[in-house]
Length: 593
Image (cartoon, rainbow, N blue to C red; front, top):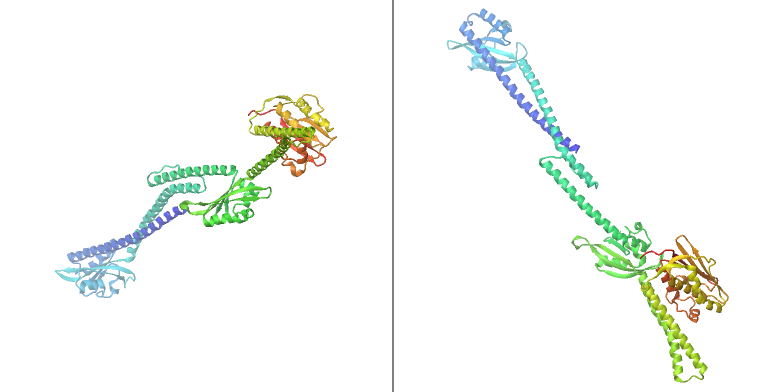
């Protein structure tokens, strides 16, 4: 803005100088012409006066008196007077000796009067007598209507130039003062003009630097005031729009960050321009390794780059599934669609990634559950049906065999009953149709009561049950029946998978906020590949032994759900041929729900 101030001041200065120069030459020309004319008129008046004095005083006849009078006249008036006769001879001169002066008839001013009979003769030339530039004026001397000679008055042009020079100096001083005042006025005027504009520029620069709180706080009238009002209104509107955009951006970022589905935006050049945390999690890559990269480099390993390319080129939607195997196996449901800018101009593609690994795993578990239930039901039903048909056919050879067949039918029906009962109970637990009755429970007492029902089976296999050494009560908040069911199922599972003459250790350890119940056996152990599926329905490590023992394959699934309903956790440690340890971690107090 300093440059604008200088431009205005400089332009005004230049204009003022041009105007002063024009005015200078115009006034100086007028003054010079006017002063020259005034000098000429003055010479004419003096010449006329001398002419009248000569005529009226008869000095033309008394030349001695004329010379004396002319000499005195020169002392009083700073002019040169020359009296010339009719034939051009110099009769008298106020400054020079007439004896040394030649005939003046050829002088332009004398010639104009005496020869050409003009009323006035004038000329400005170099004086032959005085050797300087002079202004001459001559008029005729008339006596009895006859020209008897001429009177010439003259003055040095140097005096005229000196007088005009003095006027010029005065004029120069005045014009310089006018120029100075004009420049100062122009500077003040341009400053007053540019100062409010500077304020506007400063505010616009702050707005450009994203300081949307900038305002013009000065009050001006006229167009500047209107400009300030408009800029303030523009700044307020811009601030409002920016706040809305920032709020929308925060909302969008919050939504994008918290989406469990991955969102990817790809421009028409095939570059990833936007992604979210879910996509980073799915691809196990940081945003810096996704955004700005070609989609073929990012999604090529998933085998969906051709789908993205077809969406961008053909402007159609696409859907498929993609598999990721590192760092863990995932199944992604991929939806790709074109996205558009204003005017429905295609700008690229938007892709949404849904993690359907859990859904596919659940579908697989359901399928396996149906197959397992069918298999578990089919075996006892086949046995019951086969032995019943044999009994009904009458082909049983003796009563002992018939009784053995009926015992098998009874055992298989009991197994069916246990299976159906466990399924119904597991279903109720999962649906929370059996609310817990939370009371203050002595864990040691529950362990003792629960192991009584399984002690006979353990004794038959000569398995030693080792209960907690501490007989002191250990209290927690829990459902007594459900806690007993957890202990019973874990101990029964340990008995089933522990060989004869083995040991089962039950221990309780208190922590500040939790209680750890552990059941350790010296049984066959569990392979590492089976640990992750141990709590699935109908999953058996040793299917032959489990069926032989009459297990339904639902005990550990029930245990896990009961522990989770108590806000606890269960962990398994096992080594094949050494044994397994189930650690149940339960909070001492239950949260209110």
